[in-house]
Length: 373
Image (tube, rainbow, N blue to C red; front, side, top):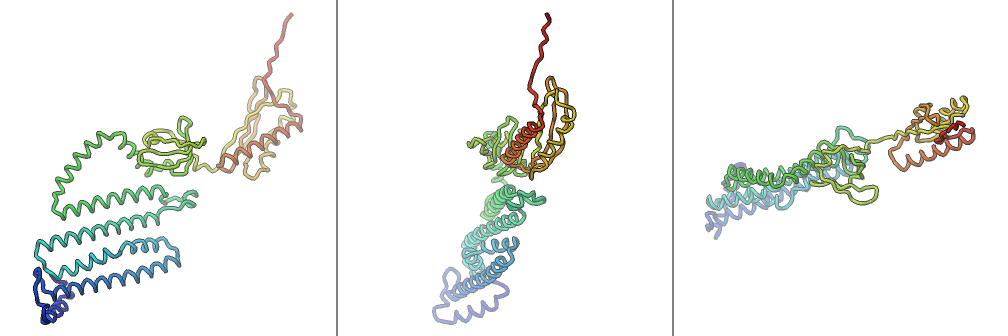
């Protein structure tokens, strides 16, 4: 077999070499001159590919270091996949097109080289997929700031794994087809085996499908603090194929099946930006009307001076059995629980101090009993 665009040069070189002593000897259907030409092809193509790859690699590396662009980093990763075995496989493949070992040996050699090229094709596709997903995925800082229209890191990792699995399954089937296997019977056998396995592993498969649901629907992600219906919750530590691990407030790991999580009602506190606080208290019935009217203003002044609080309302809400009941609503402008508790405690203490200054008494349950003689 010949390479069309170099055939004249090859024939000229081979003819000249065969005119030299000993180089016209034949071995496995090819003269020694043909083998020398094939070795020259391997060396030349190897050198050309290596030089081109090195030049392009250095160019992209410099541009990536200068501009810090994700697409340049994607090109850098893709070029890095091309290395020595790939050079050799391409070079040997081109050389074999010039040699003729007979149909049987040529077919075996072509299969070997095809498998090597297919493996590198799979590596290249996977690296391309990973790099594209890295470009589309948000980093942790952007993700915490709600990077809309972007993939979060967990979903990107899941798509990388799923894409890699699909790529290798397709390549394995293509290789088997080129090796002469009947794909129809192979796929049929896999289908029957899949049904049997599905019946035997129903619960595990349910958890795996729930894992897919969690990654695609994203009800929560790693690092979120979630609480389930039974007031059981914690920080998401790891989302596995079968189970999800939560780090509870007590410090232990809570392991929950993925299917239980997808079937449960979940409170996700990761998207919380502020905390709504409701204070209810009662004052004595003998509090003067003028003081009662001033209580909402006192509360508003206490809350408004805080840096991370926003006053909403304060009202006399109802007549209680033994008290005049007030309701106060304000917001703490942080999702952090410790910060919320610190400022809430400070607000309560200042309310107590203010009421003591104004001689306003908090009510406590009392019952008046009238005795008749």
